[in-house]
Length: 395
Image 1 (cartoon, rainbow, N blue to C red):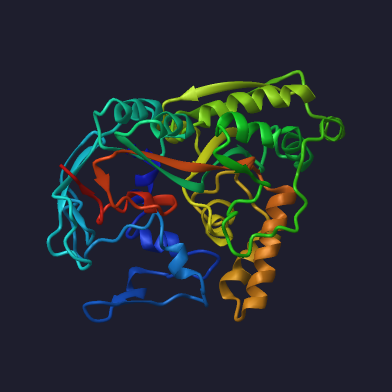
Image 2 (cartoon, rainbow, N blue to C red):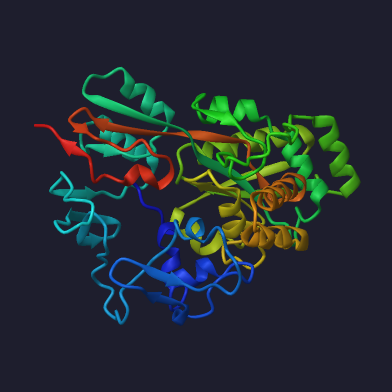
């Protein structure tokens, strides 16, 4: 599997990453004193206001450490495996015999860092590793015809999106953002980037949410309307706009290149710039006006609101600051009944659709390839794909 730098960004957020993740819309905790143990198996979290989605908001990018910990060189927690060694992205994990869920079946897991998904796919196809996670449709199709390999497919698992900075720069005008959305050929993106292993999306993050608003009109390619919007906004079609991407998710670079050819049809010149992932997160993410992102989860509208669009989040990828959006987000967290929550969720999605800073052209299926000797692999979406406590190897 390949681990990106983003997975570790929360480590530098202060006294507790828990506080950074929970303190959303005034509904979070104020200090570490608001998080206390209640016996050996429970934690009590006191929030400043009602927060019905706290468990969901804490499920990802959340790091916890034992009170009083000062030595972080051994990053072992309560999971089924313990860290034995770590060097430059390569790690060895050994079975945690005292794990509460029962001892895992594997003695150890060795994690190898690859520079790209393609390199990882080539390694599993060559028999050099036993499991490659999220290697994409091309590798999946190759592996399907071989008896020594197994393919696990997780529908609509990864979102690859284009980010447009909304607070300033060339994409601050919502008419420009709408024009680029209308210039996108979503069917072609799914067919060519995902090799058909995916589905068309509608510029709303969280398509797997039970409250996903299917009443929003499916946005389709309309070049005439896109050109009209650019003209109304006075957009400079004589300039060249760098679109920064990286080889992190399978198809991410290809999606940027195909998008560039599509928006050329409305007179917008895009120069695709491929960066090393570490450089991208150091210099581009949260800063540049135009770049691609990928997320390995898609089942919650409120999750993406909290992490990427609420004006108080540290990961506001589009630098989106919208009072109506913030109010709807806060209303969702404090909703006393399902009807109020649904109304708030619908408002969040409408705002994303109408004036957000993302082009969400489609959802890409997750494709894992493993040696046929590996059994018990998870089929869960998102980061559930790395829950290997029930996996085992035959001789």
